[in-house]
Length: 352
Image 1 (cartoon, helix red, strand yellow):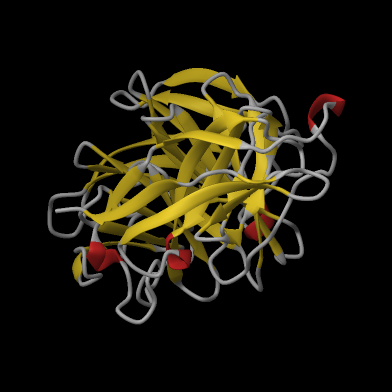
Image 2 (image 1 turned 30 degrees about the horizontal axis):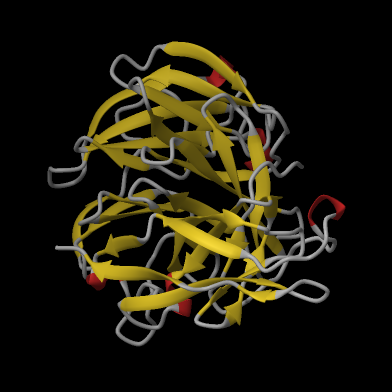
C-alpha cells in the first residue's frame, strides 16, 4: 500500500495517530507555518446526527452500505434498500430488490444515489454458497414509492463481483470487487449500462466494501477491511487509478461497510453497530512541515500522514467537533521541532 498525500484523521471514538519521525529532508527544525485550509467550512444536514451523539447517526438498519443526496438517506442491506428523510424516518422501502431479474441474486452491495436514481451492485457470489455465481447492476427510482427497479444488466462475466458502485464523471459507473479482483474497477455507462472497460489500480485493494466519488476533489473514497474483521480502512483513489492509503484506519468488531463521499464529507457504516459515522476531509497547506508534524484541532493532536513540507490532509470526524460552529486548526512540529503554527478556523455549518 502506498501513500501519496498526507492525511490526518480525528477518529470517531477511536483516535489514532500516525506519522513517521524525522525532519524534512534533513534540514534544521523550524516552526511550521499554516497558510490555508481547503475547504475551510463544510455544511451537513443537522438531522443526520443523533440528538445524543453529534456526528453519529441514530441507530439504523444498514448492514451493507450508505448513500445520501444531501437531504435524504439511503440504506443498503443484504436484501433491502430503504430511503429515509433527514431525520431517518423511512419514506420508501424496496424489500424485493431482485424481483424482475432472470438470474439468481442474493446480495445488495454498497450503492450510490445520483440524479434521482439509485445504483446498486447485486450479487450471488460462490463464496456465499451460490452456484452459479451471478453479478448485476440494478438501477432503481429514488423518487417513487417502493423504489422500483427501472433497469438492470447482468455483469457476471465482468471480472468484478459488485461489492460497491460509484457514479463518476463522464456518466460512468465504477464497480468494485470484494472477492474476485482487487486490482481493477469495472466501468459502465450510467445510461445504457454498457461496459466501458476497466480501470487498473496502482495498488490492489482487497476486500473492498464500498466506493463513492466526490466531484469537488475528483477522487474516490474506498472502504475495505481485513479478513479478521478487526480493522477497517479507507483509501483514496484518483481517476487514473492511483491508490492513496490506507488513509484512515479504525479498529472495529465487525465489517467496515459501504460509504458515501458525494457531498464532500464521508459517511460510513460499521457492522454490527448500525450507525453512520461522518467525517470531513480538509487539505492543510503551509510550509516547514516535517514527517513528524501533527495536525491539531482545538489543541488535540490528530492522526497525520505526511506528503511534503507544504501539504497535509486531515479527515475530521464530526463527532470530535461536538457541535456546529468553529474550531481552530494548527500544525505541531514535535521535538526536536519548533513548536506550533498559528491557527486557522474550520467551520461546520448546518445545511438547509
